Length: 214
Ligand SMILES: C[S@@+](CC[C@H](N)C(=O)[O-])C[C@H]1O[C@@H](n2cnc3c(N)ncnc32)[C@H](O)[C@@H]1O
Image 1 (cartoon, rainbow, N blue to C red):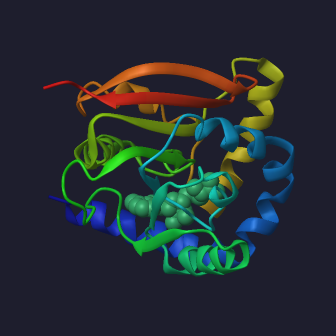
Image 2 (tube, rainbow, N blue to C red):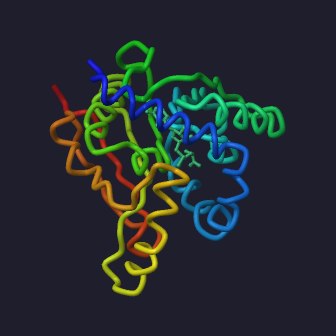
């Protein structure tokens, strides 16, 4: 059950992404090319079958979808999905794009063999982390793999200082934070952490998890 306050937060996140959608790829370009591209490749290693891309955004993961996979992408923002549709047409990506909230997905239990989510959990507020993880667990088949790529705040003083300088912009433009600590909600959401590793310095981490065996 989503509270009234949570509904307000969702509307505000949708507005944020509808506002930024036109410029999202432009603003992200230096990071996409300098940082994210090789990480997206790693994200899909060993993934196959029916896959969910949760918080698909403008479709930055499309070039890395495994051949033969049946991928569904969901996002809260219609404007981000419009961008994703354009990229889908341009690249000829086989992906089913749907407007949906990750906390209340319209899929039956155990629908997906694998789930990936890139930089969505940086955007989800603390109170939304657990419900979102519970939904991912629900729609992932037993034994399936869930991978989340997200930021962490650096322990290096200089890098940390630079990240703190960026924080107000990241909050305003993307509704995001660098330090969501998503792994602290996994156990309560019924997920086992298989691996946590940093893919870029100590600031971008990949969490790999599985639904707890019942
Ligand atoms: C930082 S962007 C990341 C987009 C893309 N995954 C990427 O790697 O570039 C976060 C995306 O999550 C979407 N989003 C935010 N809250 C959501 C929610 N509750 N359910 C589904 N998508 C959501 C936003 O609309 C946005 O497109």
